[in-house]
Image 1 (cartoon, rainbow, N blue to C red):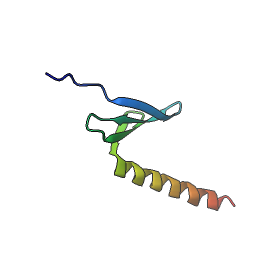
Image 2: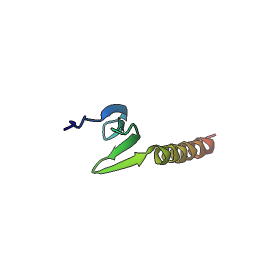
Image 3: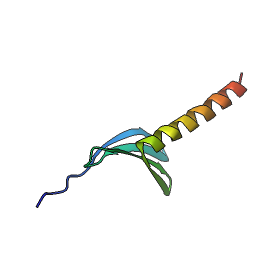
Length: 67
């Protein structure tokens, strides 16, 4: 019987209260995890890319307002 291997995990960024990390699953897919206090988001690669785009856009708008 084949033994299940633990997914490979890499921490992307960590602050005092939050952490973002990625795991490579047995099938080779990447799953991104965002821990926000007691809530954890589990995102496939396409969802992760969309979330990053959303946050980048929000930061651009906020920074443009500071000028």
